[in-house]
Image (cartoon, rainbow, N blue to C red; front, top):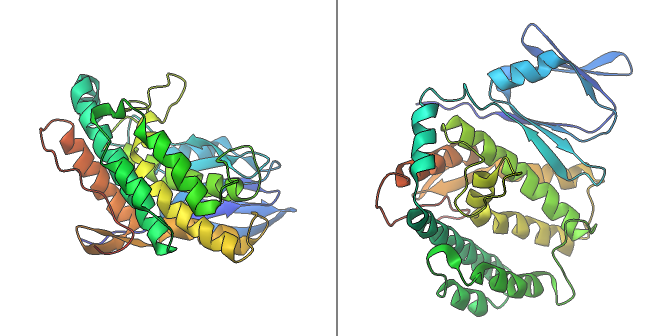
Length: 300
C-alpha cells in the first residue's frame, strides 16, 4: 500500500494566505510567491507576527487534517489548530475506550513510556560518548505511574551530562533552549496529527491531565522522542548553531519529522511510523498486553 508523505510548510515572512481551487496561495507584497496543493500538506508553521490568512484556509486545513502551528516572538511553537470530530469514522468508540481506561492501566502504560524515554536518553548520551550508566540505573527504578518521579531525577542528570553542568532546561531562555522548544514543537504537531488521525482524543492523557491543556495525550506519547530532538540540537551546538535565525538550522529540525526511522526493524518514514505507533497504542487501551512498542531512531 502506497503512502503519501505530507509536506511541512514554514512561513517566516509577512504574508497573506488564501485558497483558490484547493491550492494554498502565499502572497507577499501583493505577489503570489508560492502555490501548493493543500492535499500535499501535513503541517503549516506560521512563524511571523504579520501573517494573515483567510477563514477558508483554516476550514480546508481542518477538512484535510492539516496541522496549523503558530509561533511566539521567540519562534517557539505556541499553539496548534487541527481537526477533531471528523478525523476518524470510529471517533466515538475510541473516545469511549479512552474514557473507560482505569488508573492502573494508565499507570502501567506511563511506566513503559518513561522507561523508553530514559532508554532513548541513555542512547543519546552514548552516541556522544558521554556517561549513561546513571540514567540507565534510574530507568530500572521506574514503577507503575512513576510515583517517585524518577523521570525528573533522571532528567537533571541527563541535562547536566549532555549540555554541561551549567545548563538548565528553561523554555524562556534563548540559545539551546530555543532550539529544543522549536524541535519539540514541530514533533508535537506531527504526533498530534497522528493522534487525531487514529481517532484518539488528544486531551485525554495518561499522566498529563491539565484541564487547560488540549494535548495531554500528545504530551504523554511524545516523551520517548524528545531525546531525538536533543541529539540534533547537541550536534548543532557543537557546530556553533545556537539560534533559529538560520534557515539551515530550521531545516535540520524540520527534517527530523520528514525523515525515516524504524518500526519493528522496518525502515519507514516517520509519518508512517507514528501512525503505526498510535494504532498500536490504541489497541493497548483495551488489552492487558505488557509490551509497548516504540519507533526507533536507529535500527536495533
